[in-house]
Amino acid sequence: MADKNDKSSEIIVRSLPTKAAEPAALGLFGLAVATLVLGAADLGLTSSAYKSLMIPWVLFFGATAQLIAGFMDFKRNNIFGATVFSVYAMTMYSIALTLFIVIFTGVDVNISHYGFGLIAILIFSIIATVASLMTNKLLFAILIAVDLAVISLIPHYLYGYPPTAAGIFLMLTSALSFYSAAAVLLNGMAGKTVLPMGKPILSTKKE
Image (cartoon, rainbow, N blue to C red):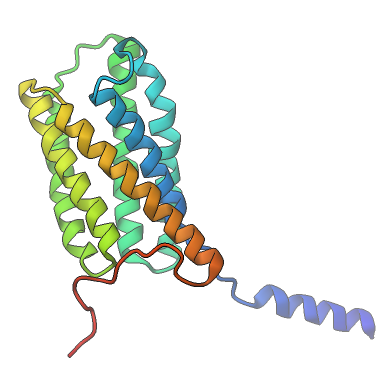
């Protein structure tokens, strides 16, 4: 009889819904690391002879970490996080693959293709920036920094302008993302606001 009760309890426990952990901290830490590495390269703080060493950081942190966060946000029914993390993950995969092709295969890549790809990402980023007005001020600031970084990179790849401005905005993106990731993690662990992120600029409540 006791054995049947144990089995019944086990079935009940297994059927109870489990709440998925907040994935934003992972995605933001991934974005912070990748933009730090890319920004340092654009500012000339790292040797151009070792550009291939950027690939693992872009691939695992910028791409894979954000892809995991996006997938988890789809499960949590968070359309903003799911879409933004997933699209930026695909962007980072594209950057990593482009670096691999250029560095390791010796293929003469027409880099302007990369510039037009960034135009597409800029369009998405602007849409995401508008949507972020309904999240919090910190995410809005991160997306503004991303927008400015992408805007600065487009003339670099299309017309050969120096990427210095892009490096500055990527570093700003990294700093804001590190803070935001820390805020999500610490606030979630403490169950209260340890690091403020700012209230939404636009209210989603119906009048």
